[in-house]
Amino acid sequence: MSETEMTAGRQFIAGRRVASGEATLLSLKAADGEATGHRFYPASREEAALAAQAAAQAFAAYSGTSPETRARFLETIADELDGLGESFFAIAHAETALPLARLQGERARTSGQLRMFAGLLRRGDVLGARIDTALPARQPLPRADLRQYQVALGPVAVFGASNFPLAFSTAGGDTASALAAGCPVVVKAHPGHMATAEQTAQAIVRAVEKCALPGGVFNMIFGTDIGAELVRHPAIQAVGFTGSLTGGKALFQLAQQRPQPIPLFAEMSAINPLIILPQALAARAASLAKDLVASFTLGGGQFCTRPGLILALKGEGLTRFTAALCEQVQAAPAQVLLNAPTLQHYRAGVETLDACPGVQRLASGEAACGQRAQALLYLATAEAFMAPDSVLQTEVFGPLSVLVEVADETQMMALVSTLQGQLTATLHADADDRPLAARLLPLLSDKAGRVLFNGYPTGVEVCDAMVHGGPWPATTDARGTSVGTRAIERFLRPVCLQNAPAALLPPALQDANPLNLLRLVNGQWTREAISPSC
Image (cartoon, rainbow, N blue to C red; front, side, top):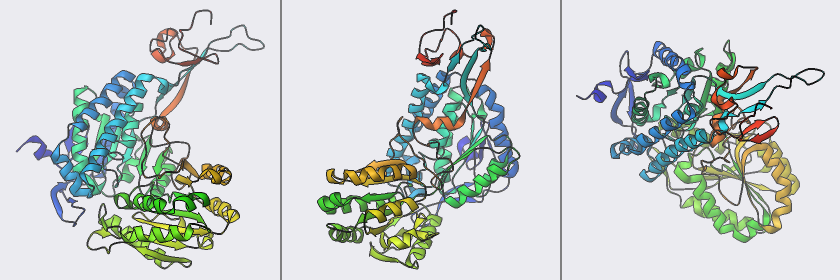
């Protein structure tokens, strides 16, 4: 029996595999709920504490590494992920029912995230160097020498997401940005894809070893109710979470109730409104309907940016559009969802909509059987949507959307104003629609982290300019993003050194600028060294 087989199912703590008790957690197939054959040990409170302590012990050494060292580490993780073969994809598919092409694309996206952060570290702007040199002769008071840079926040707990076993779980998302920032991590593996998480964690551990980093830089534990122990542990200084509103709110409250409150960056719930203005509706009703249904049923509707709300003004084109929507939904196949709890939540959401006054089912896709979910389209009145505490503001995670027929521009403005915070908002507008689009844009920008024009939100580019966030309840903090290079900022904090001796300055703040950073020096952006006269 190989060492991997002997240690299977155990926690990853400080470079070792640790377990106590019995391996009672079963990896299940998404398609039928049957066991895959992989078993896991639920982490004890003591093991959760050990993982947090391991991250804390690694913090000083890891946060003190150079940007180049961390860049090479991230690239090594990416290389290890890219080396995962058929057996990895086989178990990932079994646990999630996600097709091979989707999983391969997600692996490439995750590797891309890691390499993007490596590039960011080499670019150096993440250090945020700002220098105001001393002005000893200034009157009425002299100015001290002041130098600011960014440092790692501390160990980070990361909760794996159900719907992205790679890009928002063990290696990607919050893990990638925290490691880039210089923060060791403790991942709480999602129970829906534990075997996938284990193989991903093994790849990260290999990278840790190849780069000769402390074992506590990466840790991972298994369990269904152990996450709260991580959030409570004093060593943890920030939390990244992607999941339900209920789960995110509970962890957020725990984070705030600690003797030392810590930031919890949670992506939770959004219905992602998509608005079609009259000219666009009249010109391309059929194509809009086809593409829109493809968007909200993509991947079983299990994207956090799925357009769950469709707003359209009454008038020419709406009747044709609605008929085309119904036709597309009726042709949509039933799909296997990620796991049994996801399917149960979807069915509960459907029951709620079916019972909601002012809401009617317009179209149903292929009948669902077994672990499959049926595609659905609902029609709701504007009054029902704008009612206080309307259930229509609550995300139903799965392949459905709600159409609201809006009477006029005034009602459209009122409806948009009642929206809660969103990850995305989308406008479909032709040239003649632009005056109305211009009036809607400020409202939508207030509500969402990303506003799209003439596209579909199910797809998040990994790049510098991307924002994946938004006001509550989309996230717990609208000031950040979980995708793009600015995601690293959540796990950094500024430090100012005042009158520090030159010999003690970190490279980012030294007069000679050995890292060749673009720095803000005395109010001017420059890469030049600081001369003695400054």
